[in-house]
Image (tube, rainbow, N blue to C red; front, side, top):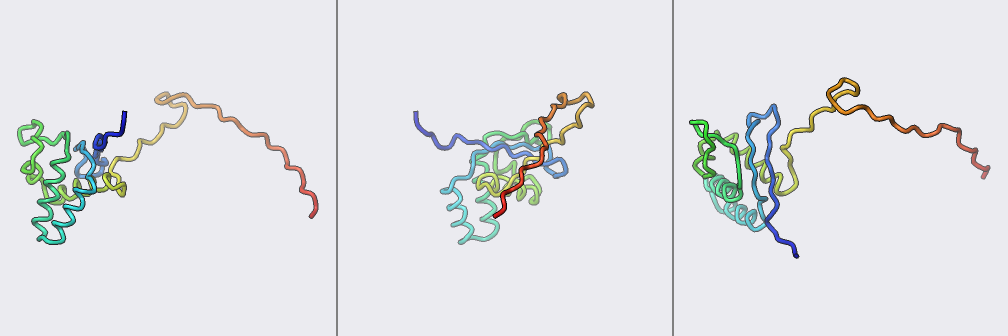
Length: 142
């Protein structure tokens, strides 16, 4: 059995204070080849062509999402569905995806705070082991 590339998936989850909170997108990472193609298009194109290329690449990599259409059903994973979002939200999604793919960003919300021990909502507190506190022997004179 060998290594099979392309099986990794990232789940983009947005923090509670983020306007995109609740949106969850599962996508394959952007490959170096795809990134180079996007960079080549950005070098030789207008901003419109550039964002269109970014959206096309994102749609090609999304495997699942919970984006709803205006009727409350799950929207199909299409370029048109993404284009219906406000530009700021599109940029946040692209940034989150590129950040996860390159290891330079994270959008996962922080872990919830741990409940204080003994309040009945979490695990029972553990007794910590304490080390003996004896004075250290004196060092020999040098």
